[in-house]
Length: 366
Image (cartoon, rainbow, N blue to C red; front, side):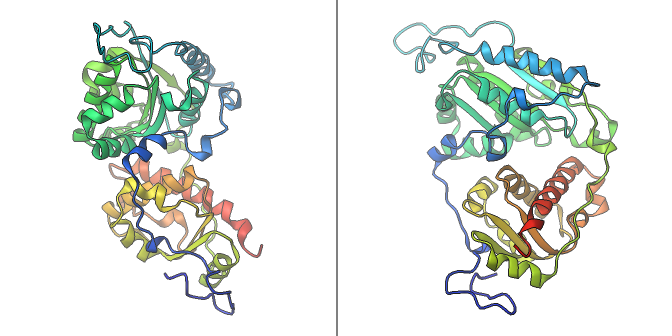
């Protein structure tokens, strides 16, 4: 939807209307992908002290204690070579990485605070931001695609810590690629921390993913200490209750009245997402303060649904409220999708879009 379309009954000033995500085709330089590997805005201020362990789940307090110690142990010189550029052994014999675990794997169900703890570890590690990297599995594979494998090893090999959120276990090719990459980084002395999803065929078993993760990373399993974080699993919570959608007129009026808002037809936006690589979805929303959508309807197929999941993640990371007309967000995905292999991703998207829809309610009539 063009930003030149006026809301019914309104007379916006020229160029004062909302932008359109469909009009954006962002291009992100490869070096910027590395610089942006930091915890997303939603997790800028999280720390171990702001994580509130459930008193009925002692594993949560234990995870905080272990991670605080892990972070403290990463201070000082790089684990291999004693300096930022010493680990490749230029001009001398290559040092050996320290024995024992150089990684931690946070193993728990949806909603127990794994990302909060992972970001807290990044913040607590005593190293300048340029020596720490934080990103999702998808962002890491996109980085390899942008830089090439060897350049990625050289770039991330200069880091003290790499945090990987939502390690994907449902794409064998990418899993092998990243496992190989992590092996090279461990040789360079980089400490690792990760969370992961569950393999698609095992989502209904009420189990955690540690065994799958350790098997899929092959020879690296001995490098990881598993921290199990117990808590209420998303499967026992049911779908979140989505706010009632607004009318097209309310959405459009709010878009024109909100500085920095975007305004798009939902179906057109889904078509546009197919033309933009998911690695650029964050850049697609840069500077947008609210996303306004008209005509929300069920997602037509799984490929489209998975792209929408990535967009929902980026909007949630950036705390961008989403105001919509049409169907409520808990009716986006079909029963077949919600019972299929990517069920967890769809539940996460519904949960996050619902939270952002609640955030957007205050914009109406403001």
